[in-house]
Amino acid sequence: MQMLESLEIIDQQVKKWMQEARIKIVSSLDSSLDVTTKSGPNDLVTNIDREVEEFYKTKILEFYPKSGIIGEESSHELDEPQRKKLLWVIDPIDGTMNFVKQKDHFASMIAIYQNGVGVRGYIYDLMQNKLYWGGPNIGVFCNNERLDPPCNQSLDKGLIGIGAPLLIGNYHNLQKAALESSGTRIYGCSGIQFIHVLNGQCAAYISYLRPWDYAAGKVLAETLGLVVKTIDGNPIDMLSSSDVLVATKNAQKDITRIVQSTY
Amino acid sequence: MQMLESLEIIDQQVKKWMQEARIKIVSSLDSSLDVTTKSGPNDLVTNIDREVEEFYKTKILEFYPKSGIIGEESSHELDEPQRKKLLWVIDPIDGTMNFVKQKDHFASMIAIYQNGVGVRGYIYDLMQNKLYWGGPNIGVFCNNERLDPPCNQSLDKGLIGIGAPLLIGNYHNLQKAALESSGTRIYGCSGIQFIHVLNGQCAAYISYLRPWDYAAGKVLAETLGLVVKTIDGNPIDMLSSSDVLVATKNAQKDITRIVQSTY
Image 1: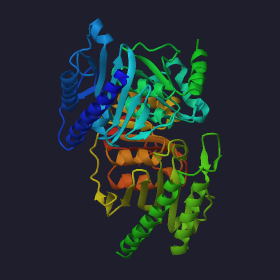
Image 2 (image 1 turned 180 degrees about the vertical axis):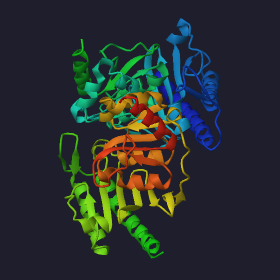
Image 3 (image 1 turned 30 degrees about the horizontal axis):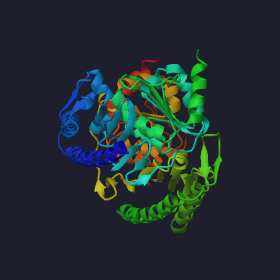
Image 4 (image 1 turned 90 degrees about the horizontal axis):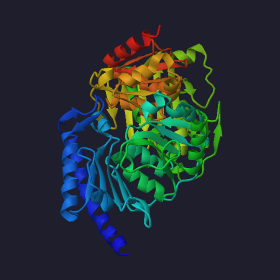
């Protein structure tokens, strides 16, 4: 009960920080951004990503100084006690390419893990001003409205999101999965793709993701009874980059059958 | 001058019809739809597509009884005089799969051709309530705001939209084009994909399209100085289904180079 009460306080704090971050991010769209590349020409970071990550880190450590923090733009080295207690996984702007090129279709994400268990996820669709948040025991909300668990669509009755490199490379036979689905959707932002599965707008999403890309989505999806695993059905190690499949139970079975047909 | 004056009247009428259609379509999202398939399991039509097409046709023929009309849900047989004079190309709901599965990301589209020349295009992003409209001489607007011609992005600096079947089938080497771009985006609605190119959010969009999928987008894109051709650089015959490329001049050159490298 103590834990739940403190999580309620955390919810209020995180929502306030994310609303502050939203104002900073959205207002920056009218000014010129300082854009640089990281691992390659399509891996972008801006001054705003860095500033918002610093802002989140400062707020987290002000109120929860013993936290471990994994952030997209920071060092990810954590000692064992930090990983174990209160771990925050943050992505200040998920979909930086869309932020820079489209001024739309990007998200800000925060996840909280306690003793290795996901207790809260927050995915903020910034341009739609829709914050998806929640966790075990309380359910998932879009702003103040509770989400029903999505209908258990099979692959042939649902849309599928697939990271473009995996689709083009036909990773694990995913082109067959795409062709068996009702259609393929690629939005270029894992947060937005997760939202589409949470909402029931897509039956599945598969991509190669880093922890900050899926940490919040995993908490929310599992709270709604969706499956979050590696593409071949194994659990996801929270601190690794991995292929990640989030899907309805039926779509996950259909995709596993297709993936296994390649072996 | 006479023609321009009458087009101004048509603009007012079409906007009014499309706003009425929007209310009908958006309010239908709360009720159960009558969904049937056409050419295959992923080619859907609903009672609302049919009703809105009838509504548009009735309005057009009430005011312009000598018009030719090509509609997604109707017969497409027109005699020569109908094609030549005032030709309307209508798609009541573009992206019916998204309409049914996502309740978002679909459009209503109307195009007007006079003596074979596109004079007006209207693409209505219904959930965003944003009508993109215009044509030669007047420019392109989003609601009441004039759009600037998008920046002439090269392929490697821009995002590319590609119809999923063409991408999966590596039609004309399009996987290479996708990999040379800043990223691939698939929204499942040609109207929405055209809007992204009009806005400069994507540098190009390529798909296999039917006349009602591209008629409005072609008018708007060409008005903004974008290129609309077949993928191998030929003009598009307005009454045929075809692969269609809409792109900035630079991205079109880059894509042509990649496509020709397959021969």
